[in-house]
Image 1 (cartoon, helix red, strand yellow):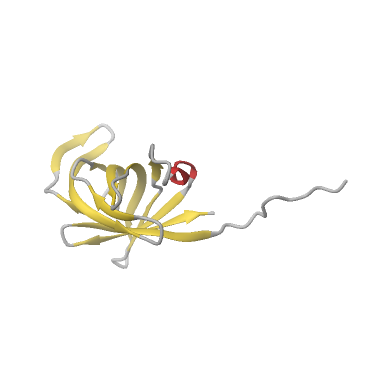
Image 2 (cartoon, helix red, strand yellow; image 1 turned 90 degrees about the vertical axis):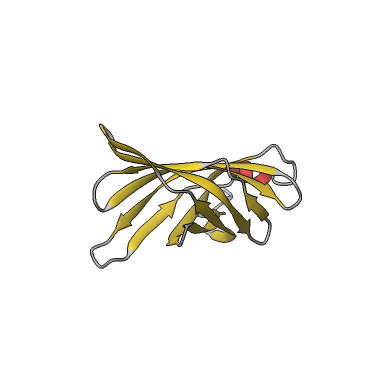
Length: 146
């Protein structure tokens, strides 16, 4: 039996873009049965990579849930506008975990949706974001899984 293998079991990735979002002062919901909830409205930002460039629109947010003193679960929605006027919606979950040594693990899994023919390839692309906290917001390097 001779099978042709179309894809090996190897994880490959490529840099998609760097996305920076500015965040407003959080809205504190408080302690809920699920954890301590805060909402961080997105007030803008930018993204740029080899195939994408534009701005983050001021209509999204992060509905963050603090699970405990070290770990927070992200629940983010954002709308992006490319420099050529196309609209891309993104949503993702992820975690920020503060390690004992002061470093942190900050990972997300952005999913994109768009009606744009030019950027339609995003509709079926799995991505992983590696985040960092910056003054006034967050920044992610987002990688497309091939």
